[in-house]
Amino acid sequence: MGDQNPAKIQQAKQYIDFIKLRLKLCCQLKPERVFGLVEHMVKSGQSSNGNAYYPIEDCLQICEEHNQIEAAFLLNKKLGKYYESVTQGLQILRSKISMSQLKIELYFIKK
Image (cartoon, rainbow, N blue to C red; front, side):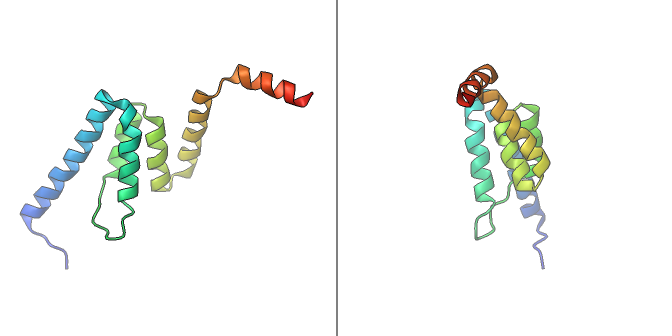
């Protein structure tokens, strides 16, 4: 049924370690590129040929450890963790919206 070739198993483990290391280094050295990298992982994991594999749980942990909220949002959504995804989405919105400016704009809309 499945190929249990030890060389292929070892190669798969090395690939997974490489992916996790690449993400971790990206978080540390190029944090502005993490979202794009994770977005590629999520889209590649949905490929029709089924050959793409990314360790989503491990990548989520790495993103959370490095405070990559937008990337963690995508990964939680991919995993079906909708509560966490919505919570992170709200956190993203709060970081991008000036609450004092919003209050002023809402005040003037009411008039």
